[in-house]
Amino acid sequence: MAPHRHNTRLGFLCVCLCFCLCGQAQDTLRLSLDSCLSYAYRHNGAVRIAQLAVESAEVSLHSARWQFLPKISSSAGEYWSKNGDQYSSDYNVGAYASVTLFDGMNRWNNYRQSTLTLQQSQLRTQQSCRSVGEQVGNAYLTLLMALEKLHYQLLQLENCRQLQAEGLLRYKVGKILESDYLLLQANLLRAKSEADNLRLTVEECRLTLQSLLNLPENVVLDIMPLDLNPYDTILPPISAVMRSALESQPDIKVARIDVEIARVGVRAARSVYLPSLSLSAGGSFYGGNQGLVDDFGRVITQSGLNSNIGFSLSIPILNYSGAGERLKQSKINLRQAEIEQERQTNEFRQAVTKTYLATRQSLNNYLSSKELEKAYRANYEVCRKRYDEGKVGIVELLRQQDSYLDALNECLQNKYTYILNMKLLELIQNEL
Image (cartoon, rainbow, N blue to C red):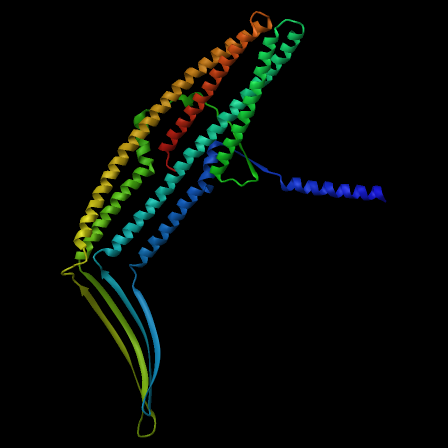
C-alpha cells in the first residue's frame, strides 16, 4: 500500500504543478509600429482621459441646446382652513409655459462657446494621441535598436568564444603567449557582459513600451522589425511638409479656437447692454367651498378657470455690476489670444523646420556611417583571415574588432535616429 500512496501523492503534485504552470502562462502579442500606435490610441490612459473630456463637452453642448426650448411647469395643491365654526377648502391645478424670445444673445453665445469647447476637446484628444504617438514611436524604435544590437552582440559573443577556444589550443602548443590568451579571455568576458547588459536594456525598453500601451501584466510584447527601403531615404521638400503640418496640427487649431472663444466672450460682455424679451402663458383651474350653504342646504362650491398670456420686456438703463470692466477685460483676453496664436504658429513653424533639418542631418549621418561600417567590417574580415594565417597578432585583431564594433554601433544609432525623425515628421503631417 505504501508505494501506491506514494504514486498517488506524486500524481497529485504533478497535476497541481500543471495547473500552476497554466495559470502563469503568458500570452505573446506581436505588433508592428503602426499596430502599436493604433493600440496606444485606444488604451493609453492619457488618451482615454482626453476622450472623457470630449464626452463632458458633449454633455455641456446638449445642455446649451435645451436653453432655446420653452420652459413648461405644472402645479397642483389643496388647502383647508377653519375660521370659527366655518370650514373652507380649495384646490387648484395649473400649467405654465414661458420662452425667452431675445436675451441679448446670451443663449446663442453660450451655445457657440459650448460648440467651440467641444471642438477644442476633440483637438486636445488629437494632441494627446500625437504626444503618445511620439512616445510610443521612440520606445518602439529604442527597443528595436536594442534587439538589433543584441543580435549582433550575440554573433560577436560566438566569435569571441571561437577565438578563445582557438587561442587555448595555440597557447597549449606554444604558438601564442600567455598574455595573448589572457587578452582573448578578457575579450570573451567583455562580450558576455555587453550581451547581458543588452538583454537588460531590451527588457527595460519592453517594459516602457508595454506601459505606454497599457498592456495587461500577463501579455508579453513582441515587436516586428522595421527595415528601410530606398524610398525611405527620399524626403519631400520642406514647403510641402510645412503646408501639411499647418493644416493638420491640432495645436494651431486649438489656438484659433481660443481666439474665437475670446471673440464670443466680447459679444457676451456686450449683451448686458441689450434688452431682453420673453413670452409666458399659463392656465389653472381652481375650486373649493367656504362652508356656505344655499337655501336648500347644499354646499356652495366656487370654481373657475384662469388663463394668462403676456410679453415681458426688460431694458437695461443703468448697470452697476461692472459690465464695463468685464467688457474691457474680454477685449484684453481677445488680444492675448490673438498674440498667443501668432506666437504658437511661429514656434510651430520653427519646430517643423528643426525637425526637418534634423531628419536631413540624421539621414546624412546614417548613409555615411553605413558605408563606414561596411569598410570596417571588410577590414576586420581581412584581419581575421590574416590572424588565422598567423600574419597578425591578437592585439591587432582585437583593435580591428573594436573599430568595427564602434562603427556598427554608430551605424545602428544613426539608422534609428533617422527612422525616429522620419516618423516624427510623418506624425506632424498626418491628421489623427
